[in-house]
Length: 489
Ligand code: 5AD
Ligand code: SF4
Image 1: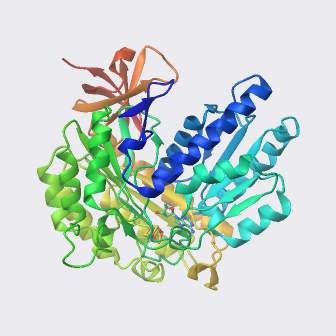
Image 2: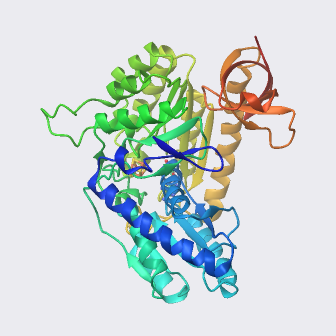
Image 3: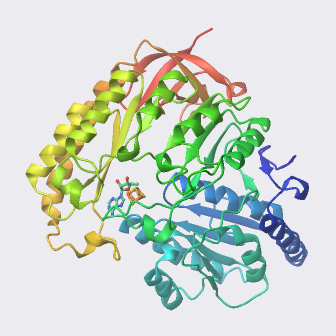
């Protein structure tokens, strides 16, 4: 059972009888208490209250935000995109410094709305709040913030919201870590036909540039039973496409003891998810090249429900830089893996992440990265400029690269990335592809926009009745990162 909202997207687990987890039942009780409070405030103000969830960062944060929004809706808030609202929450990212700066800029602007709305509450949560320096900054310079919490206790949002509605003080609740996974929290999906599903939380890899292991904690896998149960509920609710989410999905289950019947590999898990009735396509994000097994390649080869897309972060093509990044593979290991994937899975698109400007990186090191980009012929690559994160080992490395050198290398790399991506995309012209229709085109409402199995968008003439349907589209024109096409049949 699920409760409907105005957009006709259901809130999963909103009813107590569906909920097995004790903590989740406790939070549903807080939702009831907060609901009474919000209803009281509505009467005082003579209008409905509005809430805005602002999300920064990755797919994991997007999924967390769907949980925050579900709680806010159940409590009685109407959703709005505007930060001129009665409750605004920033779900933050801290992977790169520009994400931190962006959130602080937005937060500063938001305080102006509060001056005109004494009922307004401002909250901030997510990865950035797991850093003491960031919380100290908010405590000192952003006194108007009402509620601060981190990644480990996001399941307590209903309780914290209730406390905040009943307090004039800044409430701060940050946990250093947790071994707890709370199942069955209410969640409201952005799309009725596709959904992310967390399979694990945290990361044990400690790449030397990366803050994630410090802010998301150690790897904790959900049990296969809970994952399948969630997928079944979603499928019953009309979801056709699922994205299995984790910081390092192919080390799924490594934290279960030997002999535990839950200990199955990621390859086995994804195969099981495709068997759920009603699920037509399954994606995953993100695997680590060092753990990409032959078993997984074989499962993808034999199971057409698994999307024809692998996001395989390279980070650098130079073996010495990779060693200093603690990536645990060499240039040749990566190229061999890509070769194996391209041979066994010729129809799979491979995309990647690359960092430019890691401490000590020379022009020649970037030449190695460019060589890997050319040889791997990536379908797309996200290129990032190295951002020094305090608390990570790389932040203490001495040979930080000057900005102008980084910029030059970045531009050189980007040119090659764009060339290979363009070449790769041309091969789709003339093909007929299965497309999951997502929305009306942003610029032309006679067109629909859908997603191909390889994760790229295609625009084609069609009606809104197709939204949420899997249709066959012939690709007629390639425009770099998107296509035009025509529905066939
Ligand atoms: N600087 C720049 N990019 C980073 N990433 C992670 N940490 C940093 C950092 N300190 C990039 C990696 C990762 C992606 C999600 O973000 O490429 O794969
Ligand atoms: Fe960060 Fe590396 Fe973990 Fe990815 S695998 S989250 S880059 S530490």
